[in-house]
Length: 110
Image (cartoon, rainbow, N blue to C red; front, side, top):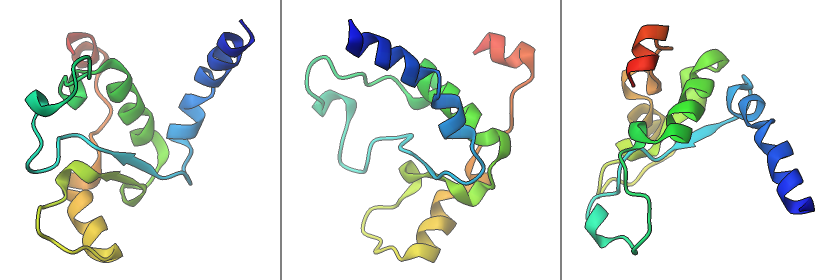
C-alpha cells in the first residue's frame, strides 16, 4: 500500500522530469539492428514507440521546452558506427530530434 502511494506520487512528477529544460531525454524508438519484436521474451511490449501511450506522452513532454540536443533518439543509431559525442548527437537529433507538439485534433486521432 505504501509502495503504491509512492508510485502514484512519482507519476505526478514525470512531466516535470521529461519537460525540464535541462534534463536529458534518451528515447529508443526502434529495435537495434539485428533485434526484432519476434525475438523478445513473451509478455514484452513490442508495440511501436509512438503507439505506446506513455512513450508518446513522455516524448510530447520532452518536446515542450528543451533544446533538441537534449532529446536524443537512440533508435537512429547506425550499426557498425563508432560514435563520439558529436556524431551521436548529429545522428540522434536528425529531423530536429523531436516532433512538434500536435494540434488537439491530431492528438485525439492518435
